[in-house]
Image (cartoon, rainbow, N blue to C red; front, side, top):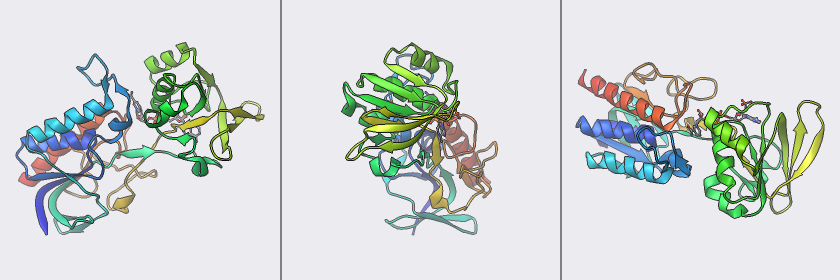
Amino acid sequence: MEARELVIVGGGPAGLTAGLYAARARLDAVLIERLSPGGQMLTTDMVENWPGDLEAVSGFDLSDRMRKHAQHFGLEIVNNEVSAIAIDGEHKIINTPKGDIRCKALILCPGASPRKLGVPGEAELTGKGVSYCGTCDGPFYREQEVACVGGGDTAAEEALFLTKFAKKVFLIHRRDQLRATGILAERVMQNDKIEVLWSQAPLAFQGEKGVESVRIRRLKDNSEYDLAVQGAFVFVGTVPNTQFLDGLVEMDGQGFIITDKKQETSLPGVFAAGDCCAKILRQIVTAAGDGATAAFAAQRYLEE
Ligand code: NAP
């Protein structure tokens, strides 16, 4: 069985930063990524809150730069998928379709995925007009009308991005105030192509071969109507990609991993970093910070 000092699971900003620090600490580390390194950055059009990059950088470019940076210092990145993790005394056994890897320290950075709304028509029309990624699917809606659901940073950023293509973007939000950070909320309000549908909630996505309308409820008076659109984008938060852990470490009610100030989980030698963690701010910069802390703490753990 392959043996390593440290295995990092996931290659988003948390994993790549942990990998950079581990490589510079000269640990015998490998980072396992199932797709391309970058995580959610890969589906982010432009990043404008990465300190030092005053000119917004594309999520794709930032992913590439982080990967190259870690590899420059010697990080090994392999394409593989972790199916399960078992504990054998002080060792952690990482199960993958390409064989098991035994390690002493483990950093979990599996990230998070878009949350589903769970309304009728959503599953049936996913890929046929219902989407969770404006960067991926926005260009299909040139000069058409689309709906976005949500009021957070993702909904605001993606609604703004969609105005590059769509002639009209309806932002459906269940409250009368956006959750998105001030500058994004300002831009939404100033954009002539965006109409915010305040205090409204989608009840269903409707259409035969593709999305034709969204059934909406006005929450203040419970009245309902159909909004005709050709596409519907859902941005109502994220769920952590922690199912494969099968309760191995302590998690909160939503499956986010609970860590201490060293980013260590309830299992000694198992650390977690990035969007999979229970925390108040999920950003590229906080994921990178978690990754650096986790790698430093993992090094200490290995030395002890
Ligand atoms: P979020 O901050 O959790 O916002 C989710 C939004 O969806 C909220 O406005 C919420 O409404 C709404 N919502 C949730 N469940 C709903 C439902 N069942 N029906 C209708 N609306 C629903 O999620 P996010 O925007 O995906 O962001 C996730 C994390 O990534 C956040 O920490 C965010 O700051 C970060 N992020 C940062 C950036 C950036 O820095 N530029 C960009 C993207 C994401 P309420 O407001 O009423 O709760």
